[in-house]
Image 1: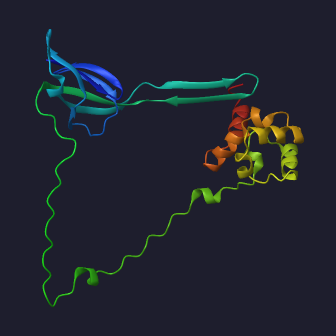
Image 2 (image 1 turned 60 degrees about the horizontal axis):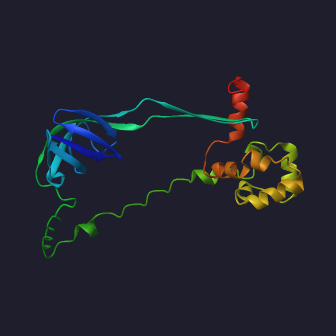
Image 3 (image 1 turned 120 degrees about the vertical axis):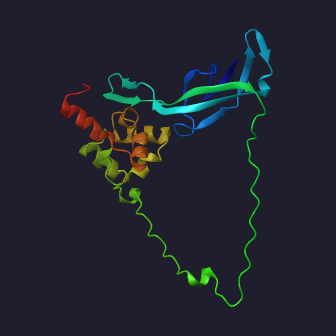
Length: 229
């Protein structure tokens, strides 16, 4: 018996004993899962009621697909970015395709256990147990950022930095709050050579505030290594 199931936005034709790779599903190797979204099922040329068909499968392993390289370039902008991606996959072995009742999505709630009556003349466990000390809060990594260091924005050199500070721009937050009109106004007034748009100052400021490495250092490292020129 065969069935066409849908998982991860894709459709697969399966039969007992088949092995397929699908978008990552929760579970460990050796566990058995049920694929509920059955679109078509049948035996040979005869079709069955897909609503009554279930497909059970065993997780063989959690794996990754082949690496996909992502390269972005902007002509005459000295902008190049190279990244890679490997899609998370789950390898399945189909154990069986057959008619049966589908398991309900929600399990029945387990009955609550009645609290045991406290013996008279004894202290409760709550009074005996010492109070736990509150765990110290971890320091916020973003609190250590020097948001006033404008030179970490790619395209901001010493001369441009002086112009920005003279105009009252003192931190990444000031630049991150710019809209297109403000960026154009600052470019015209300070004669910045269209760098706010060309070098994406607003996006860079938001990335720095989010804790990402500065593009300025990445570009300097690429230039020093002689790569991506």
